[in-house]
Length: 113
Image 1 (spheres, helix red, strand yellow):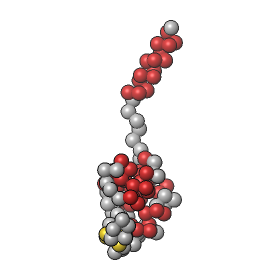
Image 2: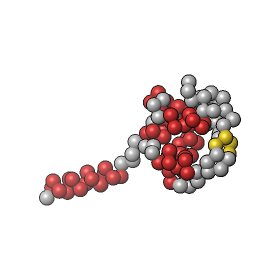
Image 3: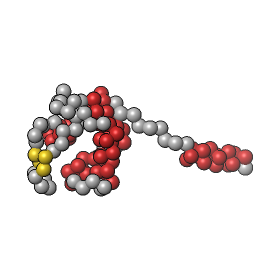
Image 4: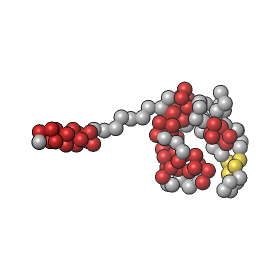
């Protein structure tokens, strides 16, 4: 009985313990940004799906902003079919790494660097 009680207590503590924050690693992102470069790495690029619009350069944006935007695309809070598909394929670690990478870039830098 004591073992069962101890296991239940440990299980309860494990659920209460906060999850460790995911820390982005810009070096790890270099293998993850291929999907981003095609649009966000071209100055003045305009996409035509689902409509014609100016694609923002994301180099130099804050990591928190990029993480927030990608998670909003995952949830469907931001509406863009291509971005939802891309964001949905990313793990929390992928998002943190990509955000760290672009936060270190300059506004005019391309992702190919």
